[in-house]
Image (cartoon, rainbow, N blue to C red; front, side):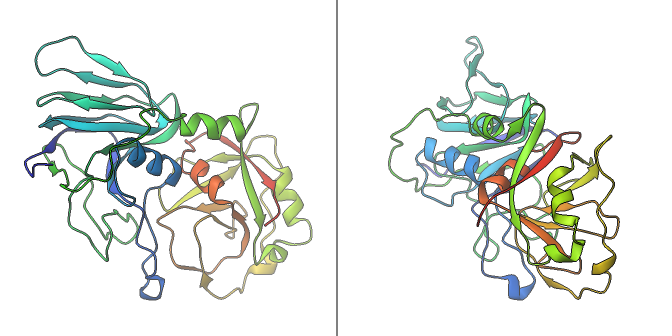
Length: 308
């Protein structure tokens, strides 16, 4: 693919970041794995455009991203359910494409991702990936440490890579978020599958049963570091944390459910700290981590126990 192929950023929405598969293996340096918040949606987007695994995509919060193509591009958008509209540079009528579908942009075309009707984050991939510099072998933006590319800004020009993989065999994949919500919902509540964490006993004898029996509301202060949960109206009171008041710092993993002194859990996502001093009472499954990355403020969450 010619080096001049690129996208010009016309709008970013609330937050648009460059993300790839992540930078594992640096926890000893205090660097978390980071990477695309919803790895399932990330892999699907790259598959739809025929990228080799690990290429960088654009991850947008609540849509609003708009890009103008320089040269012909193959594009796909996955993740949160949103409208994807292409305005043709030659004056032809605009076209709306379904989520999870690859499509072409001509030189001068503008693609816009609307606000999602379900879910929080969309992934936009182009064939060849985005050729931005790497940090510790990754093109991921880490909002906790500040490593990796800066948040995408209006006016940025992002060069497209020259070495895509084989031409994609699939041009349409099932909506990832739609499938997650269908399999992870009870009524209007999101179900997150968890296993007991290494410090489940430190929440008291009733802690684990109460975690599973309670409903929790996603706080507006949530981000890529973690999802903060509040006791939902009418649900049980926050969990008891008195037995864990003197716990020393320990290693953290993505999906860890940490219990701070206020008794309201925090679910760690991709940009989590590598250590923490509060007990990890549960750990999400890999699929549940992707679902948690799509939770919006105000969503109601239930935890469901599974075997490891």
